[in-house]
Image (cartoon, rainbow, N blue to C red; front, side, top):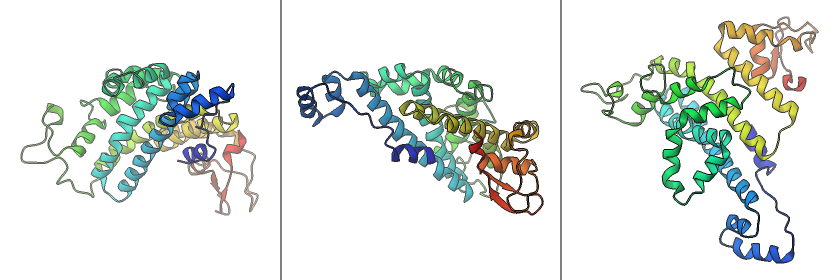
Length: 311
C-alpha cells in the first residue's frame, strides 16, 4: 500500500510527451477529446501510448488487488474466515496472474489486451498458460531461489491439492459444488454454511501458504512499478532483503536460523538508551526486518532502528 501511495503521489505512472511541432500538438488535441491514447498513436507516439495503457492497468489493478487483500485480512481478524476467502480469491487467482503476465511477458500481454477481440480472449489466454507465466516471471525475480512456479501454481489452481487454496475458494464462493469429485459438497450440506467460526483449521492452512504468495505478489508489483520509474537502488535492495528474511522469520525453524545468520551487519550497534550491545534474538531479528524496530534485552525499551538505512 505504501509503495502504491508513493508512486501515485509522485505521479510516476504519468507519461509525458514533447511534441515536435505546433501542428502535431494541434492534431493531438483534436483527437484527444475522444481518446488520448488513440491521439498518441495517430500522431506518431505508439510506444508512449503503450506505456500509458500498461501504467494505467498496473496502477488500477494493483490498487484493486491490495484493497481486496486488506479487507480479507481484516475479516480474518474478525473470524469472518469464509468472507475472507471470498475476498482472497480474486486478487490471488485473477489480479496476481494478470500482473505476473504483464511482468513476465509484457509484449504478449499487450498484444492480447489490445487485440480486436481482446476482451473475449485475454481471460482464456491467461488461463491456458498460467504455469508458463509463473515460470517466466519468477525466473526474472530475486526470489527465484525462494519460491518455485510449481508451488504457486499448486497452491492456487490445483484442485487435487489438499493443502492448497483452490478448493477453499470454490467452497467459499459457491454454496454447492458438484462438477469435480474432489470439491463435491457433502450430502445434506452446503459449503461452509455450518462452519464453526472458532475453528482454527482454515487459519492454519492459510498461514502456511499466504506468506509465500504475498512475497511473490510484492515482488511482482515492485517489478512493474520499477518499469514505470526505477526505484532508488538502496531502497530496492532493502526491499528484497527485508521481504525474503521476513518470510524466513514467519516460517520459523531452519529458515529462522538462516535469517539470523544474514543479519550480521547489525552487530556492533548499541541500545540508544542503555548502550547495551544489540542481541540478535529471533524476536529482535523479526522486529528489525518487519517493523524496523528493536527491543533491548537489557532495559527492555522498544526503539526504532532503520534497518533499510544499512543499504
